[in-house]
Amino acid sequence: MLNVVLFGPPGAGKGTQSERLITKYGLVHLSTGDIFRANIKGQTALGQLAKSYIDKGALVPDEVTIGLLTSEVEKHEDPKGFIFDGFPRTTAQAEALDKYLDARNTPITMMLSLVVPEDELKTRLLERAKTSGRTDDADPKIIENRIATYHKETAPVANFYGAQDKLHTIDGVGSIDSITERLYAVIG
Ligand code: AMP
Image 1: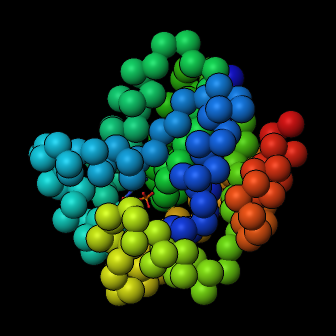
Image 2 (image 1 turned 90 degrees about the horizontal axis):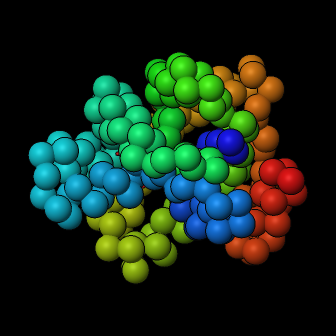
């Protein structure tokens, strides 16, 4: 199995590039953000809980997110692999994912980390807000919180995979096609 963690700050292009990678490699796309938004739309209890964190630019608690992710993995029978997009976002999530996948004998193959300067992230998120309908993209204060949360809680996850020699950093600036080519080159 090819299990890829696609990593990077908000606005790095994880969702866009995931779409390319699932087509090329026949993988299942698992985005915790997308799942939370679908639950908000469907007005579920999980959606209501997630919204209270998302609206602040904070992370949904680990126990909720980890449980959600593992139940999503289990929905897929005999997959070629997964793209984990927006998960893991804390070291505790990464540890839980490793433990879960190790028990299934399907460990993470690699982490691909998209690197984009902060000014560019903010510009991209505000631009995306025009069409995404995402309130967390439209408010500069929420964007600031999301980026600060990324630095404090999420960035250390790269070290977690770095220590396992699974971390690949990719320049996330340029045309969408050129960034896709960089990802293909690393995955092989
Ligand atoms: P995203 O679509 O990945 O930008 O996620 C949108 C929001 O959903 C984030 O700002 C968090 O509030 C929440 N979220 C998504 N994935 C996670 C995760 N793995 N852990 C905690 N919160 C998450």
